[in-house]
Image (cartoon, rainbow, N blue to C red; front, side):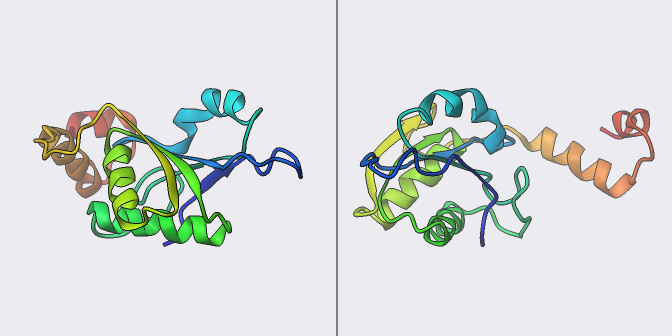
Length: 149
């Protein structure tokens, strides 16, 4: 699956720096990184991706880390990025770890923030249930949506 991206492009023709690929956390998007990207793009190409079911990327069933890592790999392939530095935050960190394990030659360096490579209890069941009630209830206003959640 091709993911939506914010891509700053190559800094200049002589730029030898590897691109920095950035992955957001659960309920986030590439837009979360815009202020950081403004700084980082001064020295290198930066590509921030919306993971599946987030931001402006396609929605699909399944949220397994292997699926999301494959989405990232496919998207970077389409952008003709063969080797890169990878930064993942929270859930994006789990995706980054998975991608680094799947494609160790492509991931030159790995930065994982706010997550560890261990199983977590997510604790978001109430949020997911409220979101399902809103979808099923098809509210016509924010007030109606608030009442459903």
